[in-house]
Length: 100
Image (cartoon, rainbow, N blue to C red):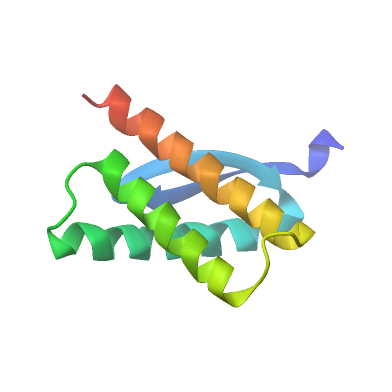
């Protein structure tokens, strides 16, 4: 089963992250990372939120809000997406803390 796992490089707010995921989910991961990056850039460019960790939290909240407006979080697909968003948010927070 581990032969199906790949390491994917994604760039979020000019920081490259290496994330392991099944080959079958690589495109989805890259799409999610690109979406998260665009949301974080919107927030950063607004100038109202400072700091990568706060920007990541605001982006996660905005994305979760979008999801809640569109569908129920009870569905397995949304739970998985929410877990991935939280995981990416945690990785970004770790990287931003390490850069200080």
